[in-house]
Length: 578
Image: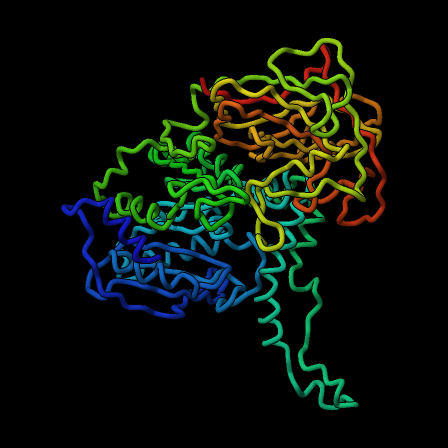
């Protein structure tokens, strides 16, 4: 893989400006002190020669040793590569708590790296997922020597779009990610606390405890803390990237996937920073790339679909090429490229754009229609650009004890047990608690590229419930390909900070953010919208009682109703490309 990256890079850089190739020297466990006196440890890869070079910095909770291959190859191309274990992880001191220390520790690390004798003072950060969070949280602290951020599959807000979405708890991600992180915390705890002398008096000897095991809750106290803060309150606001765009002084290259769990945040970071970054240079320097990928690997496959060899991504090569221009001043063509690069599914081609959202997209409403029987894909639900007049509402029973199962989509982080990406949705569409609205087959290609939304007029027998929306491409053979999805916990319909119970029987206008996509519905395909009240275990089940699943086991069934008539214009809002 290293050879592939270098080969790709050399093809992109003309011989006149190609970087010199260096022998590499490595320093393991280099230490730095944080402002509160903790020691963090990093591995450093650098050219084995005199001189000063730009720094590529990664701060990770996933073990710095895993980056050695990239560190060696990038150092050979004239970079100082520094990969640091964040506070409380692997070789670094302190206690691990996601997000809490990353702004201050990130600032301190950037400035420490810039001052190293072999650094030229320019520091670019890189990495994905939480390693993207360490970059973004460092960037909002405005370290003077930070020159750029290359953030792959990461979020813009650690409440909405990370821990919660639309008010619903991202149960699968939060549980699978936390379980993975707890393994190193458990290992550290056992190594620090196990003492054989504590068990020498134990009889019979077969009951000797072997290890001093901590409680499960002590391995991840933040998990319970997240559940105690379902509202978007000060706990979250101080960590929000979106609320601090004006503090970011550097260009961001954001890389995301249409099926990635942080797709929404990747797009919001580009849009928000282009409008609100601290300097004109930072605003002009924003870049965005989105492929047909889930959280990784970027091999061109996502779920049941293979989008072809052109869909394969190499973010390391893209990052090095961008930093060659930004940090080294190499005129390699980056400066002339359009800022947005997207993979258009359906046609399965890459396309460069001037901005996001696309200025030429036409916001088009596709209204929900039925005779009151839109339940299942065999029902009478349809979509059209004609507004409804007098029509019967659609109703279904949502039972938290029997939720609609998650089938692919924007997931993370245990692909072996609950895979991400594009999967056939027909099994879910056979359930009576899923409303299905479908267009006729298109006579020609029909492109949708941009942000998607659903406006619903809905009511419930419960004081709180969820409403989900899923955009689907139906192939001529019936394969129902999920494209993007969203959810709204109804009590957060007016504000993520101030929950308001519903009044049973009252009709509410609800807005569901269905994130983004780029897809050509080919001739013969149909466009479909699924509406339901659960997507489990991606999201926690709404118990319909107004209580959180974090503190309650009690649940009731909800009778949920979707209205579509002249007074209640429920619609799917699409960015249609002429």
